[in-house]
Amino acid sequence: MIEAQHAEIEVLRAAQEASAEVIRRLELRLAEVERRLAADSSNSGTPTSKEGIAAGGQRKARQRSERERSKDRKRGGQPGHQGKGLKRDPDPDDRETAEPPAECRSCHAPLDGVAPAEPRWAQVIDVAILRKVTEVLLPGLACGGCGAVTHATPPPGFHAGSVAYGPVLNAAAVLLSCYGNVPAERSAQLIGMLTGEGVSAGWVDKAVARMSGRLRAGGFDEAMAAALAAQDVLAADETPVNVLDKAPPPAPADDAGEADPEEQDGKKATSGAPHVLVITTPDARLRLLLALASRRKAAVGGAIPAGFTGHLMTDGYAGYQHLLSRIAGIQQCCQHVIRRCRAVAGLGPGGLQSWAEDIIAVLRRAHRAVEDARARSDTSLNPKLLSDLRERYDKAVTHGIIHNRLRDWASGNHPGYALGCWLRDYKEQVFLFTRDFAVDWTNNVSERGAKAAKRHQAVSGYWHSLATLARWCRIRSYLDSAAAHGATALDAIRNALTGKPWLPPAARRQLTPIPGTPVNGHVPGAVQGCQSGFLGRSLGQANNGFPGR
Image (cartoon, rainbow, N blue to C red):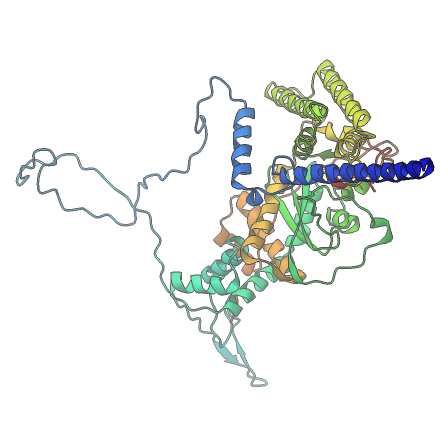
């Protein structure tokens, strides 16, 4: 009897332990679900367009509360800011005189025969759309020897014996398709509605292809690569895109397990999926968009100009780290770090993860110190201030690692431990902006460039092939960079179609890394400790001629 009771007790104890383990695992899964539901653009890679109404309002309220405004700073445009208001043209094309008033606006008395007063004026700026057909005669001369007739060569944009559309209509097709993100069918409809010229969707697509071909033949790709290679600082970012006809190459063995820093609600972009890579200067005057068949490190690293030896600002993607053998250093985007610190700080329990908020405070204080030093025309930070900030950073990181090392998570290491390990391993890349003032503390400039691809995809849905994606990237790079240098879109497109595209100006000096020394305080291939990557790995997964006829 007693032995039977002991056996029953053991069975019940085992069942209780199994139930407790199930409850523990369910609590961990619930914590992960709650973390994902709480993710927004301020603490994850979730774009603002996918935020709920409540999340967007909370984010804006938090940004207003965190924004620091000088007491003597007034709202609105600041002194020296160039507004966008209309100005009176002193030499209008047409002058008209309106009928004089018939009665007084105050007492309504008739105004016949009264003395005239100082007139007022009103202007309207408009554009006249005028259809213009130009025909060029091509004289022919018969050879006195053989009798062959030779005709004059038609000017650029004209084709002997055929009718073609001119540069303005071609510019409209290119701008609507590549800048306005309008599909070819709707672009043709809009051109017809605005100009009365019934172009076809096929012609719109050919106009875009022709523009891309003229840019390639005119040396735009090589000129952009050379100009970017000679810069002291570049920023790079990549974004996945939808391509219907794609044949991604097989993943090389050494690329397996690369981390994706841009987790969005637990979903990660496949490294073999097509991406658009954005390479830009910090002032966005040069912006190059490239179509990649995959985001593996060989593809991403190979797209960075081979001659570039300066500093590169990135978002933490591990695929850039192998470039440290040939560039001066990498600046990790502090805004990405802050977002992930916010995500960890909200996990709890209680205030245990407050160390992540300390990291945010340190980075913001360092940014303010750099801005103040720039305002004073200083070239470096106060050594004691920088030492204190780095010490606070180290203390917070150590706290995060120690208190999260053995903490359970639904899958793999706790996000706090993953983040702490990454901040420890990439400390020098996080603090680069405090040592070199030419480097910004965020990678926002390249992220803004990536929005063009996201916006086009949101409107059009996809690209048909990698070839159409590549030509869209080339044309968008050309229009963005030319506009940043003061060239109008119509002039830039007209010049490209005539074989004389706008090309970037001559480059500046280059930085050269010192051979045989650690680069950017980080020895390539020697990251120790937790290879969390998160930036290594995501927080929740931290374990293992004019145209045509």
